[in-house]
Image 1: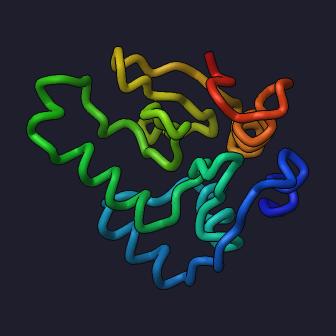
Image 2 (image 1 turned 180 degrees about the vertical axis):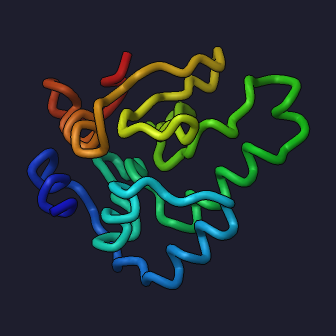
Image 3 (image 1 turned 90 degrees about the horizontal axis):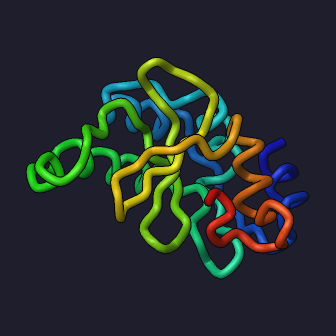
Length: 148
């Protein structure tokens, strides 16, 4: 289902080996929260999705865990940015902006965090919509800054 959705958005989408159930459980333990259902389903099909130009449209599970733990625990971030605890980052645009689910309260919408001004804006109604926009470029055929 998720490989098909990504492949329809971009024939350049790259896929990886699926994640084992035990790895998902270990990741949720390390993060201290459940992964959103859609993201867990995607990871069961492919451990991340590489988009056009090598951009990690959806990170692999290890990067999801490491990036979220870093953003929540790095003391230097606390003085620069609003708290990251409400977000669960899972991908980026290749230029520093990152995409996330909102954990608190849980919702299907995808938001983008702009690393230059710390803004958090709505980007897509759910993961399928995000893949279509990020991989398809929302009409221009490329990913880029489709969310601006």
